Amino acid sequence: MKQVLTPEDMNYLEEKLKAASPAPWRVVEEEDVDTVWVSPDVDGNPVALFDYRSGEQNKADAQFVVHSRNYMSVLIREIKTLRKRILELIQSNNMELQKRMDLQTELNELKTLMRDTNESK
Image (cartoon, rainbow, N blue to C red; front, side):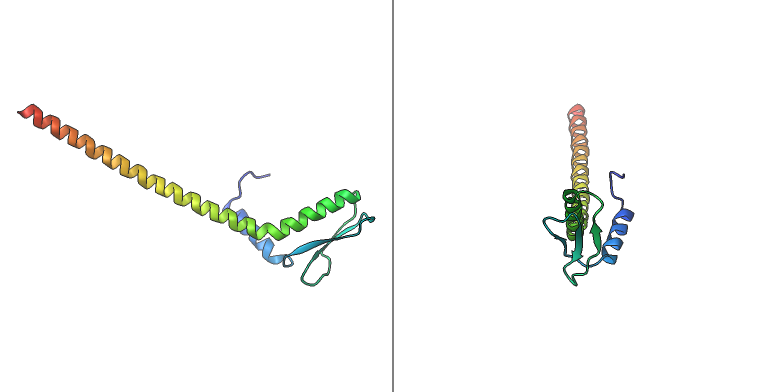
């Protein structure tokens, strides 16, 4: 599994998000039944059935799918916002570094000028 999402990965996830049934989704379950349904709240027709594992595992997997769907757009937006902010900070840091380097160059030139002036006296 990848450790970093590329811009292409982000686009792929956004495409899948747009193609999926609209959020919010919810888990439809009965306490004493192992089968669990996942359904969008919009029309109430289930989009997934979890029934191959134990009841607790089915419920946990269904909750994971529902929360993943419900928060995917938030997560994508957050990733984009943070990446943009990181880029802004890097650019700002680079500008600050360049200013410091320019000041250091100017200081070195002044020192040289002062030394040359003192030596010529």
